[in-house]
Image (cartoon, rainbow, N blue to C red; front, side):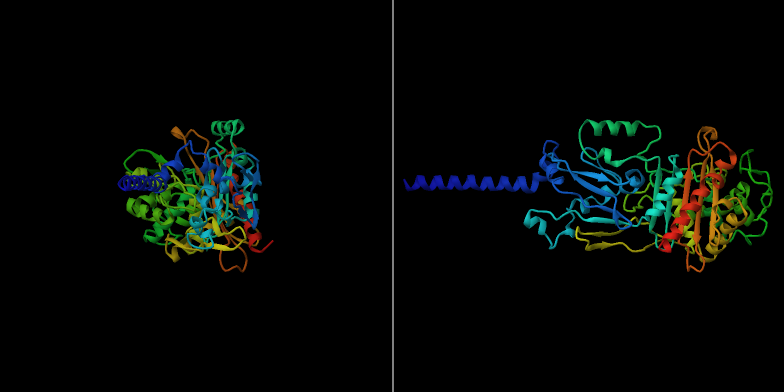
Length: 489
């Protein structure tokens, strides 16, 4: 009898050990796959059983949460959703999240360990703290101005503070209300289908995810390369460029919209946007030199995060001389995001030192205690200080006496560069209107803002298609808003 009891006890012990091993397997080995199983609703139910933290602009939340009373209890809401959609993105119970809602999801959902009062607190207590808040660098008046002046036209505005890299505005137009995607059900699915089918692509974040041929605004990069490379004796000296200029190795003549570009100086070429001079200088710099210069401003960087991923701006690594000539004036295969071109302007304004752009100022707990703080960080040295100083003078002349006069602000030092970018097969598409600029208030130690504006569907009148006609007035108003914000108005 004792022997039978002993055998039974041993068998029970083996069963218990097997149960413990299986429980450990489920908890430690299989739990990730079980969490990801679409049939497992517990993860989704737990995710939405408390409100998300908020995204703040100018100290005020532009997001919220509402109690639906459903199984997925809390649903995301947005204040002025279309205006801030390029910043917030959407947080959908059906389609996931984008932009800050995605990049800062763990903070907003309350699952980030830095929100816990003690290390491993969440694992020990089997609970999670309330969602934290994400405080952005966006200036509401700057964002509002850019959004209002685009007025639903396809285009974008990006504004940064040159000395720090703080992003003051990210505008994309036309836009959409992220709130229509927050929940589940037929209405959300219909909204998703409608938005994705729209020809105007309202969910495309044109400020950081769309690249355009930058046109003549890229000439600032070419000018920096030529000056740093010592290929220009002086900005006011002739550049030995014929007009007409024939693209190397071809019989194709490169046209100018401006007059007086034959053998023009670099200063004149920037002021009136001479294609021939800048194409010739790009070829003289050479492919390696132009690649180095473009990389210094951030082109071909696939790692840039703000913290959302930014589409890389592109400058070809292998080109013939005729292609290099066109690339040096922002055509051929050269493309850039509006944020990238704001960075070009910011590098000039900041003496050649480019700061890393960032969108999140700090992260806080639900009670407002800061748990993470961003600060200015160097990104790259785009050009030498002497070159930056010369380009500042040339960009100021573009606004005071040249093609960018519509960006002038009384009593303020403003530098700018117009751009008209051809696109489409055979360049049959309506040109994109570009303008990049920076502004410095009187007696201010440094420029307050650098801006890039692109308008896709400009008016058909040539003066309005040009960056000076369509984009410069928008840039001026955005700069005025940034200057007012700097003054605390």
